[in-house]
Length: 296
Image 1 (cartoon, rainbow, N blue to C red):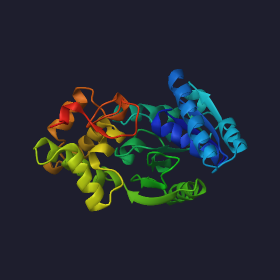
Image 2: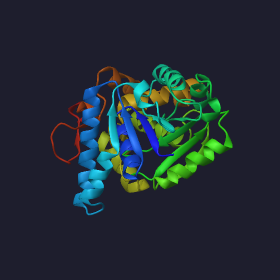
Image 3: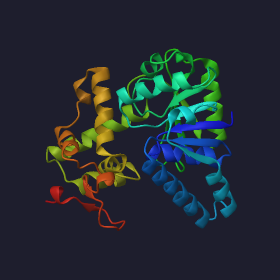
Image 4: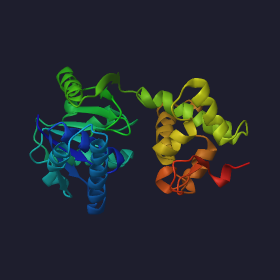
């Protein structure tokens, strides 16, 4: 297995392409947007340069990694000669189902179709194809080049052979794979997102302010980053989408998204990506500055 296609050149997609390419795989990075492809490649180059400056890799390693990446804007062309596809498009069920239907049509029968979804049912995605036995979840953590964990999620029909192959492949990427079963949110987000949602509820109910909530979790629970800062980093729209998957999947009110989270996403306050969430991110420094909306 040497030829890989990655669908989506956004934050997760370019990170996944980076890791595969750095480990010697030939990668087709696919996105319908040429601008997204160029931005994704620039991000990879910048992250590699950071590794060079820290003397973790050589300049030659950086160039070899970039040489292993081909930018492709047509999905049919990009997946015609690959052994594995990793889909990392937006966390939207309709979009993912359409992509997997297209992948099923345009890839050879032996090709494994993996998804980087953080919460959507692998079984449901697999059912949109004629090869549910070869559909699997490969959930990388952000930032992909840094974080060691990969959640490997078996759908109802995923075979032992495919699971073992993807577990072994993850190890070859210098990652630590953990196998989990296919239930809403899997493990990571089933635990993380309700915690973030509860932190937002705590803010919404006036129990404490933004920096106070994050300080309690950092200093009291040894979290490297507070839940509200982490929500900004993940993207509040992504947090909301995952909470909705949990709420729809379990039908339990404890997974209901906080109204404040819903309002912020509706207002376009998505965190780092939009320049403002619980914190302000447009000031160009590393200082944590609480958004004016939440300053007391």
